[in-house]
Length: 286
Image (tube, rainbow, N blue to C red; front, top):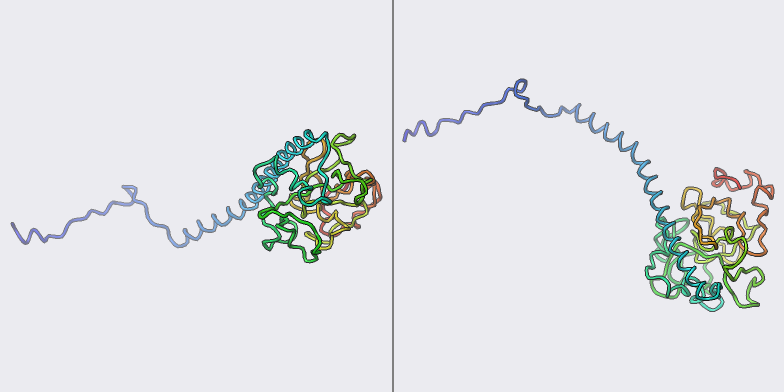
């Protein structure tokens, strides 16, 4: 074998870039232009993606409430149209405990926009109530709360719907039964910072989003006036329909038998746009 020939360097043919379509690499300027275009597209698309994500969560929230409509319907059908007794007989008298035999998946207690319990450190509008009701800065030791490990949620029930025994708090105002006239205007279960609420038509709105720390026993409209869905909450009404409710619209709903739907925080009650806390002024008036 010819040793000289064996060590002859290989001939490598370099393609002609112009005639053979060889692709050249990016220059630094071209690369920077591409990065700038991608960044611009991301800046344009991200708000749209965030809106889509929020809309998806709102739809999932409504789906949860549709399931609750079936659960409440089954319970009231089994109990001559009557609701559960309420907090006066312990947590099992509330919707959280009384409805346990009627649903299997506890996640339907949670709005997808508010999944972290207060007992795990969450606060404000997007917090769920947690085990034993822990979380409020002003929690009172006597407050009752869910008593089973793992209980938490971000929906609350209209406390004035309970079939509380006669003589218990505000018994004359309670609806007690689903078989009533005007059920389509009576909220039953809804986005809420606590597992139940009894609002008053004179209750002041939250001074800022998540202003709920001093609502125990008074001013409880703050518990449900939470901006989880762009100026709205989702609510199940006593006719088993699901509706979006504007935050200012909350004061116009028929919460209990003694409730004034034309109270001072409604257009009929001559509320002025400037009367609302600044963060709520951009929302629709009712």
